Image 1: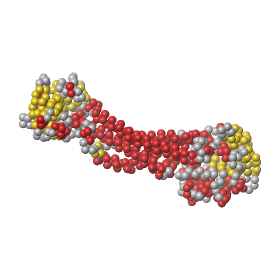
Image 2 (image 1 turned 90 degrees about the horizontal axis):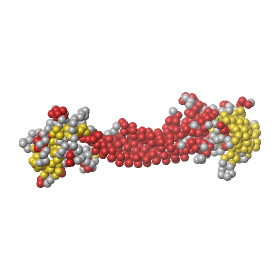
Image 3 (image 1 turned 120 degrees about the vertical axis):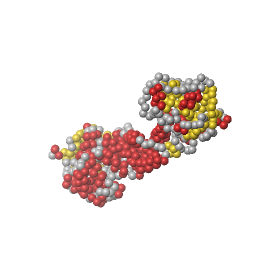
Image 4 (image 1 turned 135 degrees about the vertical axis):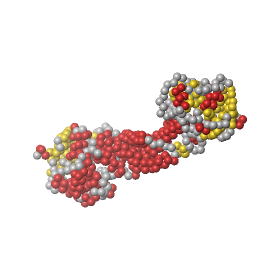
Length: 232
Length: 390
């Protein structure tokens, strides 16, 4: 349905200047993602997965073409408006977790809510709920340095979903995790997708992740070479 | 309120690094406050004792009188205006007649000034009442410095030679009735105090004086042939001395401050470099760049507040101890300055000094913290997240 379109890219091209030979990371990418999808961008390193994710997440802008996320045209957004879009509607999960090292687990998860200006009581409830989703209720006072890789990524997931965003962008979320932890966090994300209706868009070349995807988009040299709906 | 809250969290979360920086910065706080309070205390003490013993509430100088020009001394004395004479009679003004002289203690010869003062005056706090009485001899009062340089002591007699109003040399013996101690060298060195009327009679200058000192709080008035000198003139040497010393010391604390600020600047640059992933993450989480800059700047500014608190822990006891016991100058050091310095310097702390210093350090720290954060504006979040510096 047209009104449930969350992301639309039209002839999206991204070129990075690099000496005499510019690097074309994305070429004429045309994609549409509906709300509630659990989709992934797959492909080898350098195929443009992360670039696409960054542009959709308004962390970068296209060289040409258009990207519309939640009705906002990314290429025309000011820094401030892009920050507002990310703050309210988009959650990020990164390969390296990127937790704030001096904060506790609770404070890390609480952080996006502080930016949203939520009341202390509302923040407390949301953080406790998010930590319950990822099974870390007993670690809220721990610091990132005291957590394992799997636990750190679960904190990152809790931080990404605590504000109940419309879209979560996960860049190689299992790259630093063992098989058990990978499955655990993928199940967690699937649960959140199902229970909250949050759209997940992955960038991955991990077979474990690919196995959970309901839609797989293959990128090679910045071009979409396949777009398959799957049943998991 | 989110930025201060996060800045505080980050600052405390940085642990030993934060406390080390705060400690270094606190040295600047304590050094500036201690140094400046010493000069403020020195200024107050020297001004007070000079006002008590010499300047009073101001002085009227006979027209030609210039204390820095010896040639004017003998020509300056003028008739004391009637109003001032009446005030002097009531003890509310202290006329002083100054005459140049030569003294011959123990066969040697010294240039000196004879100063005639009313022994009953209440304006200057020196023991002039000891000039009262005498058995037909001329009583003289000298300070400890003059006693030391001339070898005179209480009870000694010294021959004094002077020129009277008509220019004729005359001489007489003066008996040293007492030797007094004072910080104010200008009421001691090379001076012999004698009763005013005696000196007027000795020099043929009845009813005349060179200087009339009035009590503190007196309103200046105009008398023909006399000029009123306020503290701008009378305490000028003290102010200049304190200013010169304060300026010299400020080089020390500016250096200390510069080192502390350099440490903060360096820490900020390193911090931004080390925390570039965190900066990328903050931007990814939706924090506008301006707020990221404000966060890092505030962290630096909060450091100075923390430094003030750290400084207070060890600085307050030190500064309180100093204000009670003073900083004792090495023997003979106080006199070497030529001003009314006591044997110990007692710091004086004013609210302006303490808050002024805190504001100064806070402002400097904030500026120094802000400068490196401008780099964040140019940082691409996608690079920052990868740990790159674009």
